[in-house]
Length: 115
Image (cartoon, rainbow, N blue to C red; front, side):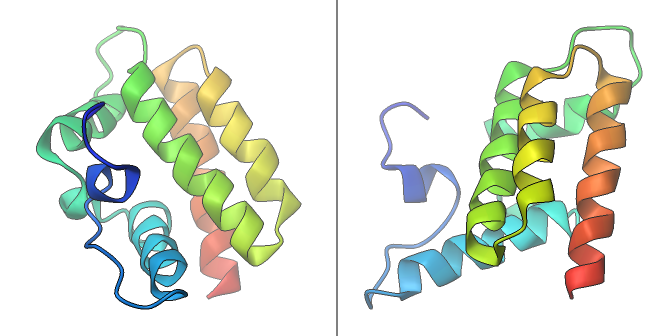
C-alpha cells in the first residue's frame, strides 16, 4: 500500500475531471462508513478493517483504524461536520475493538441522519 498513490490505495479510479477526485473519494468514504460496504477496499486493507469486528481479545488493527479514521476525517471536511472529525480521532486512538465498533456506530448514525 505504501508504493501506490493514495487514490489507488483506497480503490478509487484515476480522476478525469478536477472535481471528480473529491466526489469519488467522498462516495467511497460514504460506502465504507455509512453503508458498511468494505468490498471496494484493497483486499489487505479490507481484512484489516474486518478484523475489527472479530471479538478475539486482540488489539485493534492499526491499519484498519487508520483507514476508518482517514475516511471519517475526509467526510468531516466535505460535510462540515465537526462531530465526524472528533470521532475520526476517537477511532484512531481506540485501544480495543469494542471501542472502535462503538465509535463506528456513532459515525454511521451521523451519516445516516445526513442522508
